[in-house]
Figure 1: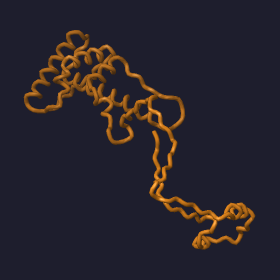
Figure 2: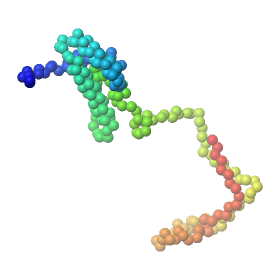
Figure 3: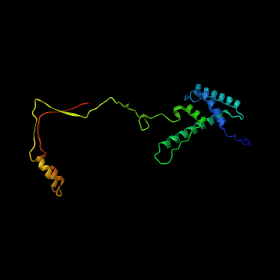
Figure 4: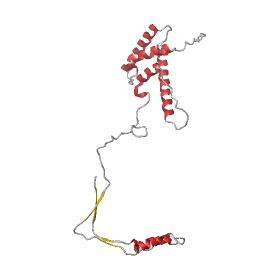
Length: 207
Protein backbone atom coordinates (compact mmCIF):
# COMPACT_ATOMS: atom_id res chain seq x y z
CA UNK A 1 0.00 0.00 0.00
CA UNK A 2 1.48 3.32 -1.10
CA UNK A 3 1.78 6.11 1.41
CA UNK A 4 0.57 9.59 0.44
CA UNK A 5 2.90 11.29 2.88
CA UNK A 6 5.44 13.58 1.22
CA UNK A 7 9.03 13.46 2.30
CA UNK A 8 10.17 16.62 4.00
CA UNK A 9 13.48 17.90 2.69
CA UNK A 10 16.00 18.45 5.44
CA UNK A 11 17.87 21.73 5.76
CA UNK A 12 21.22 22.12 4.09
CA UNK A 13 24.34 21.49 6.12
CA UNK A 14 25.87 24.59 7.62
CA UNK A 15 29.60 25.28 7.74
CA UNK A 16 29.53 24.45 11.46
CA UNK A 17 27.89 21.06 10.82
CA UNK A 18 30.46 20.26 8.12
CA UNK A 19 33.28 21.08 10.54
CA UNK A 20 31.75 18.87 13.27
CA UNK A 21 31.28 15.97 10.86
CA UNK A 22 34.85 16.25 9.58
CA UNK A 23 36.30 16.29 13.10
CA UNK A 24 34.30 13.18 14.07
CA UNK A 25 35.32 11.29 10.93
CA UNK A 26 38.94 12.23 11.70
CA UNK A 27 38.65 10.29 14.97
CA UNK A 28 37.51 7.11 13.17
CA UNK A 29 39.42 7.54 9.88
CA UNK A 30 41.54 4.42 10.51
CA UNK A 31 38.29 2.42 10.21
CA UNK A 32 36.09 4.50 7.89
CA UNK A 33 38.82 5.08 5.27
CA UNK A 34 40.10 1.51 5.33
CA UNK A 35 39.97 -0.09 1.88
CA UNK A 36 39.28 -3.60 3.14
CA UNK A 37 35.80 -4.97 2.38
CA UNK A 38 35.68 -8.21 4.35
CA UNK A 39 32.86 -8.97 6.79
CA UNK A 40 34.80 -7.95 9.89
CA UNK A 41 35.91 -4.62 8.42
CA UNK A 42 32.40 -3.81 7.16
CA UNK A 43 31.00 -4.47 10.62
CA UNK A 44 33.59 -2.13 12.13
CA UNK A 45 32.67 0.59 9.61
CA UNK A 46 28.98 0.26 10.45
CA UNK A 47 29.70 0.62 14.16
CA UNK A 48 31.99 3.59 13.50
CA UNK A 49 29.33 5.45 11.51
CA UNK A 50 26.82 4.75 14.27
CA UNK A 51 29.21 6.35 16.76
CA UNK A 52 29.73 9.34 14.45
CA UNK A 53 25.97 9.86 14.09
CA UNK A 54 25.35 9.57 17.85
CA UNK A 55 28.13 12.03 18.76
CA UNK A 56 27.08 14.41 15.98
CA UNK A 57 23.46 14.61 17.14
CA UNK A 58 24.56 15.22 20.73
CA UNK A 59 26.29 18.50 19.87
CA UNK A 60 24.09 19.55 16.94
CA UNK A 61 20.67 21.19 17.08
CA UNK A 62 19.06 19.36 14.13
CA UNK A 63 19.00 15.58 13.91
CA UNK A 64 20.92 13.89 11.11
CA UNK A 65 20.68 10.19 10.34
CA UNK A 66 23.65 7.92 9.84
CA UNK A 67 22.94 7.53 6.10
CA UNK A 68 22.69 11.31 5.63
CA UNK A 69 25.99 11.92 7.39
CA UNK A 70 27.73 9.22 5.37
CA UNK A 71 26.40 10.64 2.09
CA UNK A 72 27.36 14.17 3.11
CA UNK A 73 30.94 13.20 3.85
CA UNK A 74 31.24 11.45 0.48
CA UNK A 75 30.07 14.67 -1.18
CA UNK A 76 32.60 16.68 0.82
CA UNK A 77 35.42 14.43 -0.37
CA UNK A 78 34.29 14.83 -3.98
CA UNK A 79 34.20 18.61 -3.59
CA UNK A 80 37.75 18.73 -2.22
CA UNK A 81 39.09 16.46 -4.96
CA UNK A 82 37.40 18.60 -7.61
CA UNK A 83 38.95 21.80 -6.27
CA UNK A 84 42.42 20.28 -6.11
CA UNK A 85 42.06 18.86 -9.62
CA UNK A 86 40.96 22.22 -11.03
CA UNK A 87 43.87 24.01 -9.36
CA UNK A 88 46.36 21.50 -10.73
CA UNK A 89 44.88 21.61 -14.24
CA UNK A 90 44.92 25.41 -14.32
CA UNK A 91 48.51 25.61 -13.06
CA UNK A 92 49.68 23.35 -15.92
CA UNK A 93 47.80 25.28 -18.61
CA UNK A 94 49.55 27.30 -21.33
CA UNK A 95 46.97 30.05 -21.78
CA UNK A 96 47.36 33.65 -20.73
CA UNK A 97 45.71 35.55 -17.94
CA UNK A 98 46.37 35.77 -14.20
CA UNK A 99 46.98 32.72 -12.04
CA UNK A 100 43.76 31.24 -10.69
CA UNK A 101 43.73 29.34 -7.42
CA UNK A 102 40.68 28.16 -5.46
CA UNK A 103 41.72 28.06 -1.79
CA UNK A 104 40.42 25.44 0.63
CA UNK A 105 38.72 26.40 3.88
CA UNK A 106 39.61 24.85 7.24
CA UNK A 107 37.08 22.03 6.88
CA UNK A 108 38.29 21.16 3.39
CA UNK A 109 41.90 21.21 4.60
CA UNK A 110 40.91 18.67 7.24
CA UNK A 111 39.31 16.45 4.61
CA UNK A 112 42.46 16.76 2.50
CA UNK A 113 44.51 15.47 5.44
CA UNK A 114 42.13 12.51 5.80
CA UNK A 115 42.42 11.64 2.12
CA UNK A 116 46.22 11.84 2.14
CA UNK A 117 47.90 11.04 -1.22
CA UNK A 118 44.50 10.22 -2.73
CA UNK A 119 43.62 13.91 -2.72
CA UNK A 120 46.14 14.95 -5.39
CA UNK A 121 47.46 11.60 -6.60
CA UNK A 122 50.91 10.06 -6.42
CA UNK A 123 53.99 11.49 -8.11
CA UNK A 124 54.68 9.77 -11.42
CA UNK A 125 58.16 8.29 -11.92
CA UNK A 126 58.00 7.97 -15.70
CA UNK A 127 56.43 11.04 -17.34
CA UNK A 128 56.99 14.77 -17.13
CA UNK A 129 55.51 15.07 -13.64
CA UNK A 130 58.43 13.26 -12.03
CA UNK A 131 60.63 15.16 -9.58
CA UNK A 132 63.87 16.17 -11.23
CA UNK A 133 67.16 15.13 -9.64
CA UNK A 134 69.27 18.11 -8.65
CA UNK A 135 73.01 17.78 -9.28
CA UNK A 136 75.06 19.64 -6.64
CA UNK A 137 77.40 22.31 -7.92
CA UNK A 138 81.10 22.00 -7.03
CA UNK A 139 83.62 24.82 -7.27
CA UNK A 140 86.69 22.66 -6.59
CA UNK A 141 86.67 20.88 -9.95
CA UNK A 142 88.90 22.61 -12.48
CA UNK A 143 88.97 21.44 -16.08
CA UNK A 144 91.52 22.55 -18.64
CA UNK A 145 90.74 22.34 -22.33
CA UNK A 146 94.42 22.26 -23.22
CA UNK A 147 95.37 19.53 -25.69
CA UNK A 148 98.84 18.03 -25.82
CA UNK A 149 100.03 16.37 -29.00
CA UNK A 150 102.75 13.79 -28.50
CA UNK A 151 104.73 12.22 -31.34
CA UNK A 152 106.14 8.73 -30.98
CA UNK A 153 109.95 8.65 -31.02
CA UNK A 154 110.13 5.43 -33.04
CA UNK A 155 108.23 6.88 -35.98
CA UNK A 156 109.02 9.56 -38.46
CA UNK A 157 106.70 12.43 -39.02
CA UNK A 158 106.90 14.39 -42.21
CA UNK A 159 104.63 16.88 -43.80
CA UNK A 160 104.90 17.93 -47.39
CA UNK A 161 103.08 20.92 -48.67
CA UNK A 162 103.67 22.39 -52.06
CA UNK A 163 105.04 25.95 -51.93
CA UNK A 164 102.28 27.20 -54.19
CA UNK A 165 99.45 25.81 -52.03
CA UNK A 166 98.86 29.06 -50.17
CA UNK A 167 98.92 31.05 -53.34
CA UNK A 168 96.44 28.67 -54.98
CA UNK A 169 94.02 28.94 -52.04
CA UNK A 170 94.20 32.72 -52.05
CA UNK A 171 93.69 32.83 -55.79
CA UNK A 172 90.54 30.67 -55.51
CA UNK A 173 88.72 33.70 -54.17
CA UNK A 174 88.65 35.14 -57.70
CA UNK A 175 87.49 31.91 -59.32
CA UNK A 176 84.16 31.93 -61.15
CA UNK A 177 81.80 29.41 -59.49
CA UNK A 178 78.82 29.97 -61.78
CA UNK A 179 79.51 26.76 -63.71
CA UNK A 180 79.85 24.68 -60.54
CA UNK A 181 77.85 21.41 -60.44
CA UNK A 182 77.48 18.74 -57.71
CA UNK A 183 79.22 16.21 -59.95
CA UNK A 184 82.43 18.19 -59.52
CA UNK A 185 82.63 16.80 -55.95
CA UNK A 186 83.66 13.43 -57.42
CA UNK A 187 86.80 14.86 -58.96
CA UNK A 188 90.26 14.20 -57.59
CA UNK A 189 91.27 16.26 -54.56
CA UNK A 190 93.16 19.44 -55.33
CA UNK A 191 96.92 19.32 -54.89
CA UNK A 192 96.73 22.22 -52.47
CA UNK A 193 94.67 20.06 -50.09
CA UNK A 194 96.96 17.02 -50.20
CA UNK A 195 99.33 16.60 -47.22
CA UNK A 196 101.55 13.53 -46.85
CA UNK A 197 101.79 12.49 -43.22
CA UNK A 198 103.73 9.53 -41.83
CA UNK A 199 103.93 8.78 -38.13
CA UNK A 200 101.90 8.28 -34.99
CA UNK A 201 100.03 11.10 -33.28
CA UNK A 202 98.76 10.71 -29.73
CA UNK A 203 96.21 13.11 -28.26
CA UNK A 204 95.95 13.43 -24.51
CA UNK A 205 93.54 15.70 -22.63
CA UNK A 206 94.81 17.28 -19.45
CA UNK A 207 92.27 17.86 -16.65
